[in-house]
Length: 325
Length: 276
Image (cartoon, rainbow over all chains, first blue to last red; front, side):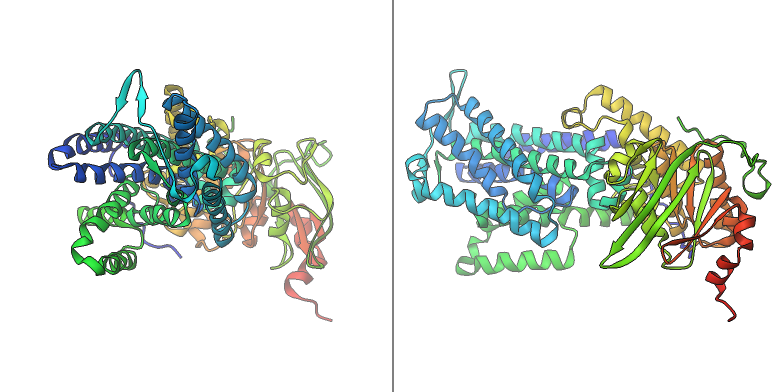
């Protein structure tokens, strides 16, 4: 029964890898504008950043806690519309609207998570799917508040008398927020809470018998990821100045999950890379004109067939293998 | 604090236990029954486990041993009857609450967190002794980082004490079967339980590994932890148990010291079949 022990030593002390990877992220965010010469490129980078913020949060739920959600665009949408309605219609300060959106999403996701996260697998997917659909129906039909299917205009983000305007400014805003999101995510993973989340994924019953209240930690992951989505939604609303219910619908939710899985589950930087690549790729593939969607689909299929763990974990695995050899 | 002492206290047949000494019951099972779709997996079972004992549960396959473990640890809810632990009725409580009261266990079929390193597996076992609230973890408060470092040192000590020193830096997914069995014991001990339930810790191990597990169990018991053991390795059971409860078809067949149970004709019949 005894197999040969292949003792895998962990790469290096966690503190170093943690700080190094954060420094690398900061360096990339800081130097990228040098390569992005026009506003179109900056715009794509900003959109990639918004997606990355949502995906870093969603990865805590999907990649680490092992629970699926097909409704997170709904929370993104609630954040976006909370800011849109409170700031534009009711004249709230944008930062207050952002926080109000985040708190509402926190409370809502907490109330929803309790019953929903008792479900597993396909049933959980169905239930979370319902959240996204309900949110997008409400946004479409509450025309008086939301402007209906055509969406609504959103005022720009003003704070301390400064108005955030233009791609160059927003690039830095999104860059800083993404950096904070990654920092929080890395903190969480390497902590008692993060280990509890991963334990829920690894074996629920084993987690329970050493004292982990698995239901509580599933809810925690759900709420944290929903709040990340809400904050990204609020900022997104101010950046684009126009929000539509499409940002909260089923297809957006699927896109977010795809980004997490494509980049690599249970990897914070995998989530970032997945979000960036799947935001940039459709733009880059426009050279294929009518066939761009087919090419994108083919790339996704091949990646998942040959790299089932996702992009970053597969590459890390190859590097580790080479180092051992 | 359950520190593993170095000097093992004699257990089993050689142990000097005054028969009449009033020993405090740590666990009591009273008229416990559990049905699965009309079939009684455990039927009207009662027994007590004394503080500090190694108490084995034996019986043929399908006798209800693992079901009993699941009932005691809260994984299953009993259909009828009660479980008393440390002076309180605990039947119906979820496993994580029982863990907080000092109960911990291992599994017959490994339940390892294969998505973590070995030492992280053990650190999850320290969960009850760490701050499990969201914000301190999210913002990596210095007090949390310090306690986490202590937990890691403690986890490394525990791994060493069950003979896993060379796997301290290993990933759980790269460890052999025998080492994973011990990793489960280290994780269960990390919660500092009063009662440790071991479900076939020697299953699938070779003779040398079985003897090593044997030593680990004795050391654990010597440190003051009460142990309930389910095991098919009769040599191990007879050697280390203070008391044995034998089950068959979910009912109690016999109970007593290893010598008494081994001599019981019903037990022999259940294992070997009867002649008539």
